Length: 358
Image (tube, rainbow, N blue to C red):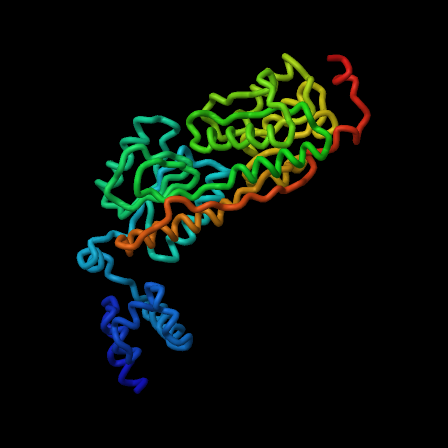
């Protein structure tokens, strides 16, 4: 039988087709296709058979005929990913999860950055549909007009019907962060509200105000920083914290909008001769990779960015392949407080001369 199978494989350099591969394996083309496409029903096929199919596909460098598949299914196995910008940190964490799952499923993707420009947010879906994408991922970007394709948002909070939104439980996140600061003795806390370009901003700000009132922390207007800059670098947090410190030093902690802003805030604190956390504690949001390696190591609220990216890509692929099924409008993920070195108790250190001199 082995010799017969080998005779079925062309040795003239031409690509091996699904039919030839199936004949070589003495299996039906449907079985081979199910295994190679990692279809949900592939689990019903024995592990040895699946391994044999994958080994043969690798041995003969089998490549699926994507053009034939596109004609048959009217799908291109391509999706559009719309983001504010591509930078280290939040987007790296999310996109690692997105990319790994899409590659596993044989999907390609186009990524476009709108830089917070409303005109590009509105134009990109149309432009990507002209590239024949099968659906969209909106990362920290809010779809404002309905499109006739599957759409999954990550932290997008879209109100457009038919969009599935993957979001964080911001009430729980605020409770974790504020309870941590409260238990350390902090009562006068400076807060950052994210820019209007970021869909999470309003939801997170409402959660902070609600939880602060519940715990007994005053959100003082004079200690509130309203971020206007559309930036994902430490520059987001540095200038506003320097300006705040120039007005007052009557606060013991800063709850930053994200980790990059927190890194900028720490530098601003140090540049006026104060120390973090000795004089002012700082807490971030997201738990990007650099948070663990900055000095001081950053206390932060962790978003499961990789997990959210994977789940969003998985949900989008399901919506593309089975559009007739019903899907959730919202999937909520749980945050985690990661306590490191940038927060400390108010009375752990002697009161500095800088704070006494205000």
